[in-house]
Image 1 (cartoon, rainbow, N blue to C red):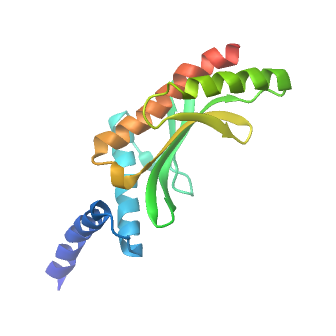
Image 2 (cartoon, one colour):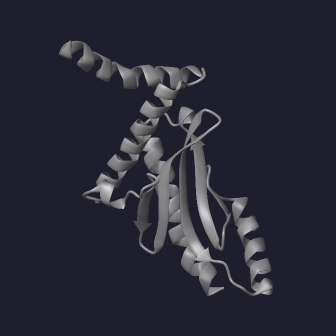
Length: 167
């Protein structure tokens, strides 16, 4: 009996990955397995960049809290309409209260959006200007693609934050 449990445990991630890549509807079991897999890939990235204990950077909603120099962000797996997504978001700056400053900032942010790499975009979340990317797990073929998306968003926020705040 113990061998069967071990075999099932090792094949469940493979079954979930096959279902993910097939394009077919994912079951609740597949979604749970794939979410855990995605989170473990994010945690492996954190370890790779020097975080000894990714759990110490994980909140009650399972978001991993990130930092790259002056940029602070989050990364995690989200589910919508039976699909799983890697979502990464980093704060560029707090929005100014002056309407004239907001108008100029929004124009610059929209102009920047036209030239941003890959899936990154700039937007407003609450009272903050953020860099973000959301990618369907079906299109992320390996852990390096998770890492690239996380690093790209964090590096973008880190690059833009000082320059936009100065303006």
